Amino acid sequence: MKKVFLSCLLILTLLPGMLAANEAELEQTLTPFIEQMMEEHNVQGFVLAVTSKDEVLYQKTFGIKNMYTKEPETGGSLFHMASVTKTFVGTALMQLHEQGRLDVDRPVVDVVPYFVLVDGRYKDLTIRQFASHISGMPDFDSNPWHNPQYGEEALERFVRNFISHKFLTHEPETTFQYCNTGYELLGDVIAKAAGMSFEDYVLENILVPTGMVNSTLLIQEADMTNLNSLHRLKDGEMRVADIYPYNRMHAPSSTLISNIDDMARWVMLNLNGGTLEGNRILRKETLDAMWQPALGKFDQIGFSWHRRMQQGYQTIFHGGNDGFKSYIIMIPELDIGFVMMSNTTTQPYHEFAQLIAEKLIEYKGKVK
Image (tube, rainbow, N blue to C red; front, side):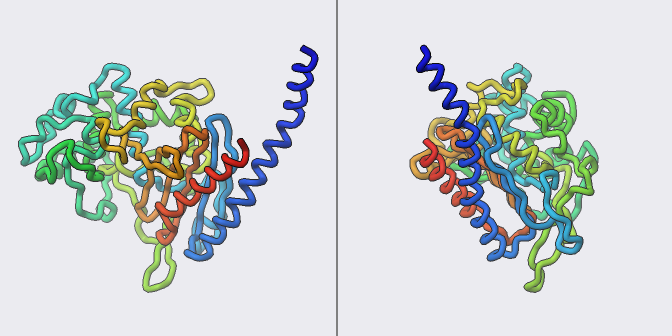
């Protein structure tokens, strides 16, 4: 018994030093790598957080929010999260499914009876098919940011007026076809099932319980003093874009505004099976099911989350790219994940995120 006690005491004594050494290794591995990428691609601002299910392992901000004001990035700097927003849609749908307020395997028309396509097959399309991008629904083909709408009715109007003119491009459940349009529809499904606006539902049932207190789906509620500017090349020169990517009719597919402090919490919650600091927003078995291949055969997609094998490990991920770049990759087997955000269109996207994941897999191999 005395030996066991002394062994435990030794571990507790060494643990802070071990943790510090691990943090130092992440610093030495990731920081120069990011700084080199930013220099090569003229990236103005970039932030990254690496977490386990229990803690932030590495978090750092790089560069500036605006090339004219030169304000530095901070943990509170707000970014447009683009399609990472869809992971909140998937979570909201499964919350309502758990509560019996909707059935994700039932047709969408059960909840939104005014949903209609020119193609008669629309009557049988399910919530799950849209959440997994296997409905056959085509995407919208217009620029959504040049004519922004801000009213609560914008989402329903989009479903009624825009989607109704569409044909399916594939037989349902035969092809994975990424579709923002389907997520606008799902946002309206959430609103109708919950009896409140899509934005209010996500705020009350996901953002607040997760402690994401600075995040919002409504640009009017964002702290403008912390909002990043978007930077893009124009005539060969880097410039601040004159349009911010926001339109309330596209809220479910892309309008979450958040910072690295809040998004680190989102990664931790998902790695921890749907709970954070005692607040459970989703059952673990529900979350696990969301990460499985859609219909058991679409290996690249689950329920809102994407899937990819990397170096022998299953990764769960989602990216966002509306000029702003965002990316989450989680490696549940290794209890590690990260979120990155950038305010510059020239920042490398999928390939850079996968390189970070590769470095984290190597790091976990060293600390075993």
